[in-house]
Image (tube, rainbow, N blue to C red; front, side):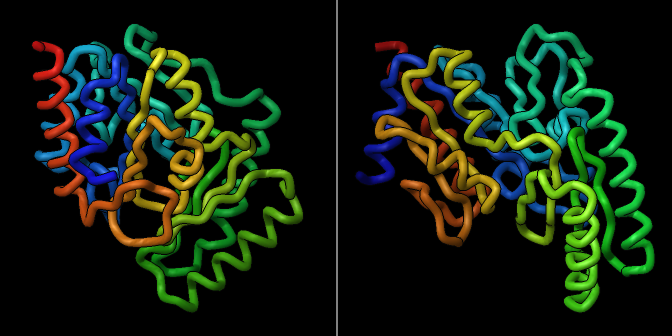
Length: 260
């Protein structure tokens, strides 16, 4: 099916969920992750979709809920749903500002202990750093040499094998994530689909951590891969600008269909 036909089908579904990864999908990857922001075109496309009748829009990210709200410039009066920490944390329109903790106290204590030890392990490796996560932590090597990247992966891998072998490990672009909970973005999409009673879902992502969600989609849904790489997506677009154009087109078509 052509891209045009896929978009037209979604434009006419009774209740649409648009679920979007953030980093690399709506916002360029940033050397300092907390400076990431949606491109103007992507932000306009998301805003247009949120305003479209019978359309729910969600950001589905591996970021913690706290960090996702900051980089998405999210307000409490927003109609955007947030699924953070790969589906371990959620915020929905009308929810309070502070959600319940994503893990029990014992898991949080272990998270803090392992994060502190991980920071010590990589302290002398230039360009390597640890990002706190709600249910774990992430090892970043975007700015590191190949040798330091290998050293960091080996050292942190050994730590986690010894101390938390049952934690879930995810790999992405210059990132290695560890989490005490095993939810993935497929879990998040399924929960959001049920919550908003969607008759179809569009999910877009750019990395291997998005493939769980892409593989989970059904025949009436549309998976979009942003950028190159092996993927389960039905449709591939070259970059953020192309995705923004597709989303804007979808918003326009759904608005027209609602007026018919």
